[in-house]
Length: 389
Image (cartoon, rainbow, N blue to C red; front, side, top):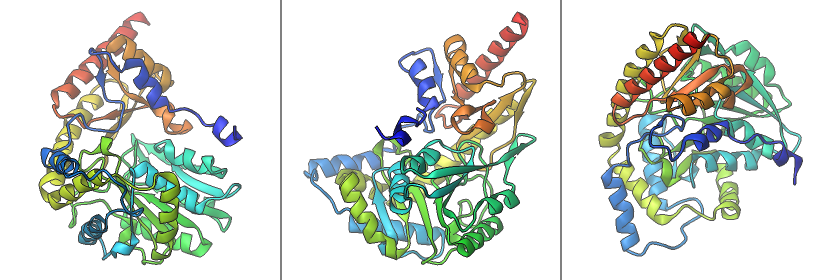
């Protein structure tokens, strides 16, 4: 086995989930997905596609009509994008891996802003890259970027910079001015930029175009920039495994070849579902975002009221990221919470060493009463620990 694979750390989120999955008494908030099913009109489009017998291969880059629809969708939010720059992938994570395969050779230097979803660190490592992490820093519970440290880390030796914003797990977001500064620096160093923007629509600040600032807003079509998106979060389609990339036109054909050698194509009936999702996007996504804001505004104040909890209100995403004074081993705490309190949270150690004392709570709950009950269980468990001490 390749050493790069042998040395990969397994998912600590999965480790916690495996300890509690199948237990009816556990409130599960460990994965980054809603407990609400995909809207019926999206499911119906897939069913109708299957009933028509659309069970065959598709184009590597995706159905032309889906690529056109995605180009219109992106152009409504950001500067115009041509369909020739759209690449449909079998999930957002597949898109991110394809980007790593296209850009990273063994021995290349890759810089990643952390804490972050562990796949984004693992993918360049799988390709044999040397991964250097630039850590966000918590200030009163809010994670912030040291811009000078990031720019110093990205040099002419850096092949790829990976940034996820809005960020999983911290909720950190970038301003447009910060994005411009980062992009200008990458232009100067010749560094490719991979922007994971799957949470761009899950943004709770008031904006003109109802999404978080994007590198698409400041980039030129031929910049060394790949932007990754997914249907998972803003259309409640996590299990469908469908995403897309926005790439420079010169990269499109190469990614088509990589898709052939990875997955061949996304399934047609899934792409039909995506077309329905996009056709009804203004019915679906704003309602999801409004509900997630209610979930955030229910959970965060309850957590903040617990003595010893440090937390800030996230501006984007679907996670509350917090730490509890005196409980610095998040993996051990998360395991105990599953077993002793019936509460499933993701350990901060899964996302970076600097967040090993933090916990991630996905607040995408159909019924906010589940969040209230979860906090009650956390409080009761902490009170038990205080008495035992």
